[in-house]
Length: 176
Ligand code: HEC
Image (cartoon, rainbow, N blue to C red; front, side, top):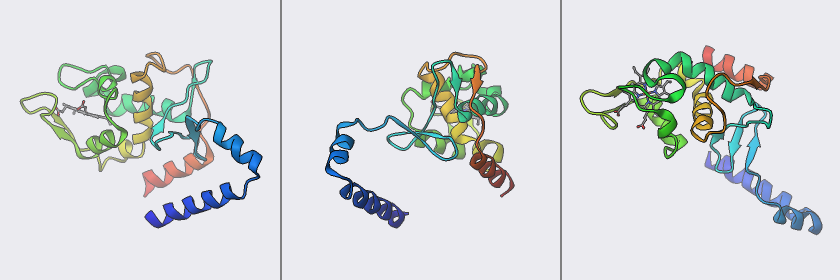
C-alpha cells in the first residue's frame, strides 16, 4: 500500500516537473478541486473520503441515491426515517456533523455499546452483513448530504445512472 502510494506520488511529481512552465503556474493558481470523481462515479473529498454530489436541479449521484434506499432497508428500523433518530438510537444526521468517515465505518462494522445511551444501548456489529458493507459508502454519503442540508428529506428527485464499473464492484462484493 505504502509502496503503491509512493509510486503514484513519484509519477505525479514527474508529470508536474515535465509540464511547460505556463501550465505549471496555471495549475498552481487554480485552487485544489473540492471534489473528484472515480471511474465508479463515486465522488471524493480532497481528504479522500467519499462524498455526495448534488446538481443544481436536485439530481444526486448514484451513491447518494443508493444510500437512500439502503439506509431505509438496513438502518431505518432503529435510527428512524432519514437518520432523524428514535427513542433508542441516535439521529445519524446529527452524529455526522462531527463524526469522521473512518469512525462511521468502524462503528457500523464493529458496533458500539452504551456510548450515546445507557442501559444496554447496542449498535450491532454489521461487518459480516454484505447488504450493509457493500453499501457502506452509499449510506455514508446519503446521511452526510442530509446532515449538511445538501438534499431535502424524502426520496431524491432524480439520480445519475449507475456506472458499469460500479455494477461490477457490486456483483463482486455481494458474490465474493
Ligand atoms: C438494532 C438497532 C440498530 C440498527 C439496525 C442499526 N443501528 Fe446504529 N445504533 C443503534 C444504537 C442503539 C446506537 C447507539 C449505541 C450507543 O449508545 O453507543 C447506534 C449507534 C450508531 C452509530 C454511532 C452514532 C453516534 O453518534 O455515536 C452509527 C454511526 C450507526 N449506529 C450507524 C448505523 C447504520 C449506518 C446502520 C444501518 C446499516 C445502523 N446503525 C443500524 C442501533 C441500531
